[in-house]
Image (cartoon, rainbow, N blue to C red):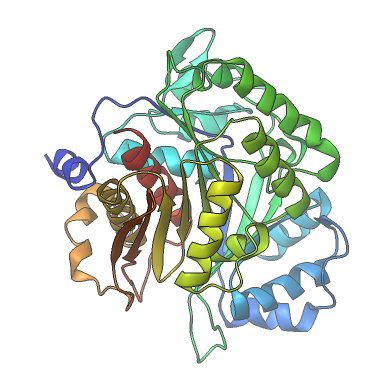
Length: 399
């Protein structure tokens, strides 16, 4: 009953076939406190000099910057990963993560069972996964039935922080340091792609990709674009990420030029980097969103910030308003911890950020803005953007 009520409140279609990707990995999460900050300030040396961090001082520098300006995501070497994990072993909580996992988990909890991409299928990860659909030997299985024991496991270290003037933390967010050959080398779950890129099996593909891809692996983006071009594809939403800007920029252009995507999702920092928005203001983000919409032949561009979300779209304002409202509720419910459906009814108790809602149409294009909910004491920070991305894409694109 609770799931059905949340499904109705989120405007999610019951029978929609959604695929999420492209990666599932471990997240080793630790809360930034006085001790972690002391380490960062004492160890900080210089900004990163390469796309993959190898020096502890560079990692510390990024954390010092993150608590002032907001988080980000960076690749690190295996050696640095093991050094940091050993340093903070007693603070770490390990759980499943990855864009594909978080998108899929949000939809599953809201009553839509997705097909999820698993390029690596080690026993511990597959046995720990929810009852997603997994492509295996030409059929859909649950994760525990699709194990490959010899596959490696990869891990992302996530430093989570909540704004605290007393600690000198100015922003709420995460710094993610990833040791992950899947993402950096562009490994794909080709069994997943066989179903996910074909509209005979999938209505919508929602995925994040390329922000951790090494620049010398662009041929993996070409492969993905060719696969999308060669098939009768479903609707496709690409969620951007911070990390390797060269690879992300190449992917956004290559996939758009090939007519491989309908919808983009970005946060405000990504919008300033990739869409060249002048600032994080609603007006500047909207201007950049409409410019990208026209330049790349997209159906919509969705931009999310901690204060508001907006859509620049060819769809009707009513459709986008439902999509953004539903996604804001889902992300706010996730911050509360526990069950997403159980929290859905509690979201309205949270205050809204002071941004005026808008739903306008001019010259055939819609501008919709919705204020975000504000949870001053979030229990969960990981996966919020992925949760938002999956819900808004389903509501907007699976009408």
